[in-house]
Image 1: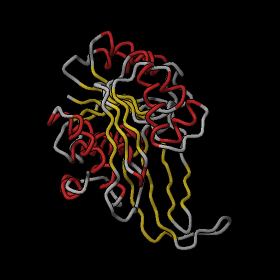
Image 2: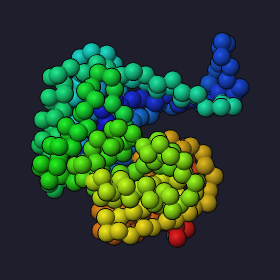
Image 3: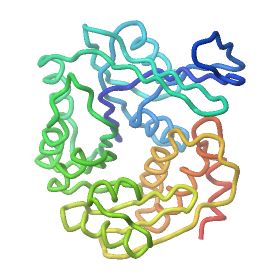
Image 4: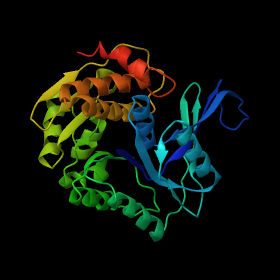
Length: 301
């Protein structure tokens, strides 16, 4: 079974507004409410690709109930921990002349909530795979990722980490199966300016030297690079298409890669699947579907 861990999930309220202005009443043109959070995106895309997963995270209040309801309606199993203080955050995304976002804080977790989370993590077995995604809210200890990864490593559980800066660096010693930095995150991590693909590979190899098994570098419209644990380097351009919405595209790439690897146990095929899935989400207002991915796969070289 696949498990995704999203410590601060959300409901995303997405609206389109003609000529959005500050300090005045704006009326929406379209609106929808969707589950938000990197791990939840991974779970939803995996389901679209025919793979079940269990979503773990903290929820609270009426918004948490709605989030659970929406995830289960999409066919994703949940093992959310209900927190007593606060509400699951609402992230407001406004699409107009420019994109504007207002992200909520999220609920307050206490020691009992953290203990319950770690107990769930400790019950995951070596037959499973875990995806840790996203940032850590203020109410959760900053070392929660290393604590989780230490448990997973001791239990011989394969796990993936999609995080940035210290969150990522601090868990490399636990040898994650896959990490997915982008060019900007590599530059931030190593405090350098990267201008060539060779430099991208050089710094990705440094992450492998620090413990990462496979490094998938997303380059947006320029495609992606994969350094696998066997020492091979793959590069592919992104397929052609009109970018409509980049939210969730990186999470979709992770889901596509893992789905491809689960089905084929072949890194090259997994890499192609990852690019096709990330692109399919970018070319759509919603997350990638299996048909959209299949249509793009033939264009991945």
